Image (cartoon, rainbow, N blue to C red; front, side, top):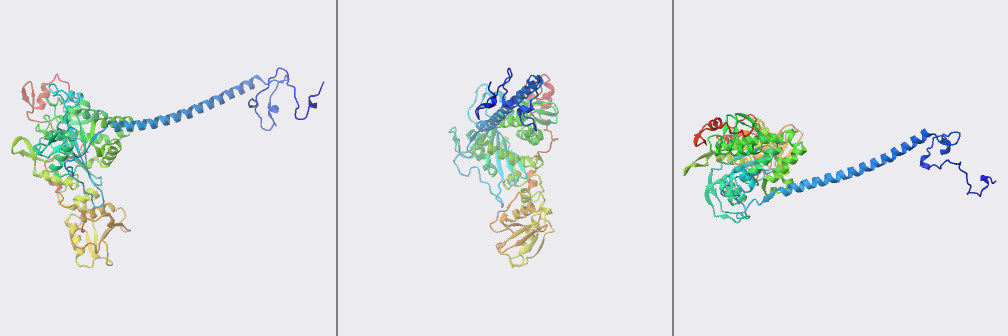
Length: 578
């Protein structure tokens, strides 16, 4: 027999014990400190591994393989989830953009038909949006909701703008105004041409809402001509849109001060507060015989209550933080709206919503244009003299939430640059021109405009080539108010180390009480006069109830009666909302 160790160098062979299978290397664990795999094995006298150790090793190997499979699956699943989520986000964005319908703001017949905004001395501009609610039965759903299609069927065209509101967002986003224009207002409709349908008019005198028949751009031009307010954008909503929007936010809370049944809009509500969804919401905002004196004025008041409630709900924590609610709202809104091309994307609409969200509810004022009877038609109205003040407050970017009755540039400046009343802002005015009396003249102009009587005067340490307004820590907003009132641009403002405001009049201020060539809040309106008889109310007025008409404005069974009498008589008709 040959000894196994006698084999050639490098080719030594070993004889395996019979019936003992060779184990794979990964199955031979190394025990630290033993010097190798073989030394770590526990063997019986016959040289085989114990059954328990073998079973445990196999179990560990199965768990390791299963762990690696789970890890690979998790990584793949996570990658797919990220891909699907990104794709869904992109699809959602494109889907919303695809929902939007947009048309030009102007029809091209006049370059300034919508007006032009003027920036303040800091380059900021307000935003004015014409919000229109169309009575057009241009779809089967609108016919079902609005009725009146039994003879005509689904109609073409835009219909009439039975709801018209000018939404004004201040240049500094500190306040907003919503002004309703009653649909019965008689005005001059300018020459217009609807580029989509080809319908045109050479201009006429008629109801303001009729201009929409010649396209949204014609309605924009008509409102601008009536009010003098520049219109930057428009948003148009139809019957079905109101239903979709109210459903998307889960309903809107509204209160009526008495039982009401408007047999024309079909609104039927018991006295008290209700959550209006879908058709009930549409019936509420359409009701003109149920509220006030039964005219369009009462309807605008009720619409303000509805919109105030909707704004409060938008701003509530539960609405905009719920992804499902946000999707439903965004999808409904983009499907329901026709907008001008300047708002024709989700990104732009989100930007607009962000601007409006900056304004607290207590600084959003709802008002209705003051009216007087039309001397040529007792069923129509014309703007009252007070309406000119209301138009001017919006055109001059004044806030209606702090109506003091003072006709002052300071009131306008305070509204657009600072929440601090002008009467609480004192300025140290120093003369750096070398011309006697300059500081006194400017200081007197400031106090005349409502600034604090603690404003003082003096001479600057030396001659100054340029005018500067230096403000202390936390006083920038007050400095902007002063600068806005005097026509100073932002380039004249400097932050200092003091705690007040110091205006140094330089040689570039050649004379007068306002800076030469500067943009000031000239000819502001009397804010108290602007809100007189305008039924003004802020959006935080959560306890306001719509005033049910006490006149016989409705008819039931051929008998004229009040909306409350009709409610009592129509016991068999289900209420619009519980």
